[in-house]
Length: 331
Image 1 (cartoon, rainbow, N blue to C red):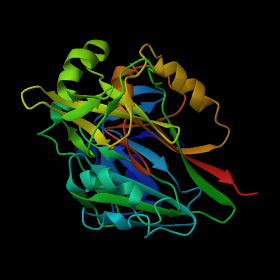
Image 2: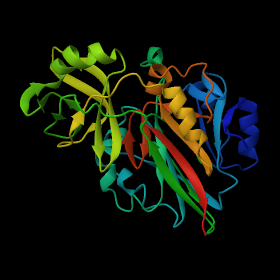
Image 3: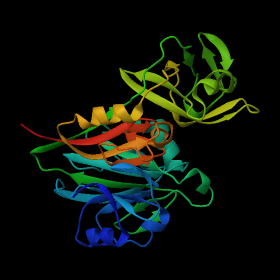
């Protein structure tokens, strides 16, 4: 079954037929769906052949064809460290967590240290709403096994694969580091930062963002780092000059060397070239709304359908990154 937007009645029929799915849509669209083998979350941004905002239909990521078995679970901030321990021996984990929930914050700062975190791919996204709905329409996750809609828990789907299949999570960053830009290093982990060093000198990140990053990037402000060769973006959520603080969409890692991003990237072209070249089955694709808006994806033809969310999960919380779940045949 193709991963794309479907009407609510079509999704009801899919659930009742026992399909194993990740469902994404508005809170209105997800409310009251039948119980079944699915988890869900809120986002109105998708690629369904073209970039689109939709509040009535539901995007379906269908895993039925590869699922030998499945189960669902919910986690809060006190037990999210068990997310990888509870999975199957051979399979993958799909997780949805509401933005700004305690479980979201805890996972963002601790996930890479969880037991068995790399035994199976852990992918997913942070659910949210449109910017003008924030405060009026709560970001949610949904566990299809019990129908619970929550703004506090991470909803998790575990899928078991047959022995002849293997899953892998791939992370792609379409940005590149501007090697001529200043080196920024922070003294502690966390979403909110103030003091830092810039080229070895003490500085305030809010002042630096206002004077240097904002004029270059406009509303799509970010910094970038390399973690063992993997480029990781940290997108800036808010700059508060009065407090001298910057809030990021994902947690800064103390000691990592951050720089600015090279400008002028044609994200749609790179997205189509990169994902269109894949030869294996791509079960699902998660991207950041920063691509949707800053990359001008709205209305553009894109080669892979997927969800645009407020944070992508590829073992850890990421920003402005493409996360794909891919399946290979075991030789």
